[in-house]
Amino acid sequence: MNVLSLVIICIFYFYATILFYITVLSRRKGETSAFINNLSNSIVLIISITISLILIQVLKISKTDFIIFPFDIFTISFMIGYFPILYFFIHREKKRIKNQDDSWKRYYAVYAQELPLKYEIYRKLTHLVVLAIVFFYFTLGFLVQNVFIYILDLLPPLISDLFFSLYNLEGDKMIFTQYLVVFLVGISLIGLISVDLIRIIRPDYYPLKPVNLILREKEIQSRIGPHISMGVGCFSIIIIYGIFQPIGPLVICTSMTMSIFGDMASNLFGRMVGRRSIRKTKKTYEGLIAGMIIGFVSGMSCLVLLNDLYHISYFGLFILPSVGALIIGGLDFLNLEIDDNLSYNVIITPILFFLSTILI
Image 1 (spheres, rainbow, N blue to C red):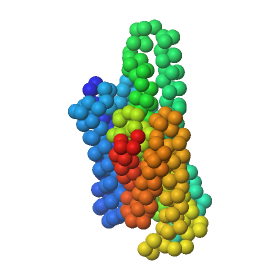
Image 2: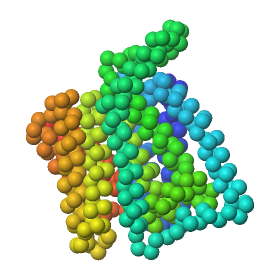
Image 3: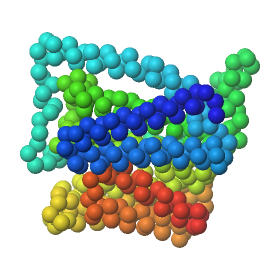
Image 4: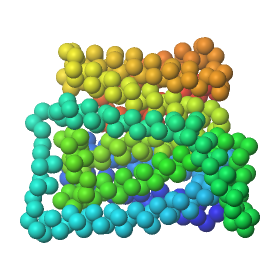
């Protein structure tokens, strides 16, 4: 393992520690729901990084490091550029407070019952960003590698030879896209956790206060935002299962697609037409059924689109999304304190991965 890869691994462990610190804060404040959710996220992130290291360094599942050159350089460069910008916006918020500008308080209004439907829709639409991961895995990632190689071919050998990883991976483009996705999701997670830490420990200095409008009442306090749970869930399954080519990316993309569309349908459909509550909770059986149906349809659609690449059997096209839909329904019925954005991904993916090794 090269030094930069080791440094990046330590950085991700550090951010897992930050999540654990936020967990301790929620415990001290007596916020049980936040404590369970935050602890689950920190544990999942720590375990997933560790498992990935074991698979790569001990079992030699992958011939490359945790993150390959030049993405290790790009990750460090991102952090060097990101934190001064973050500090600038935090400092701007501090000046607003010093100037007795209390306009930020309107973003911390507590809704009596539940998040207004308009903001709930905004909240769910942000989940569609996850679809970008699918495109990078199977479309844009190939284009990015070709552009990299084309540019490097124009440079002197002394420079282009530094990027040997790109040439070595040219024969297996899915390996390149795997590490491209690890890089993109990884830096997103670093940025999101950094900002959310500010929101929790110093909410008046939080530079993205309008985001609070799509947070539920229990998330305004010490509970990490749903975008963090989504980032941790996606990053965890990518670094563990993505190195198993080519089944890994197929299962990852199918699981994430089912998770986001199943969650969106369950919540929005349940709020708009739901009548029968599940054990006196805000969730409804109508929303549960809608989540299962949409989850199944989105999962099958994803598999059909990728069928030309992997030649999935008709039985596999049906059984994989069916199992995923049942898991979505089961988790929705249990109504765990853990964010759906995390639980859906980390539970659906290993089960579909195991089934896919048999059916594909």
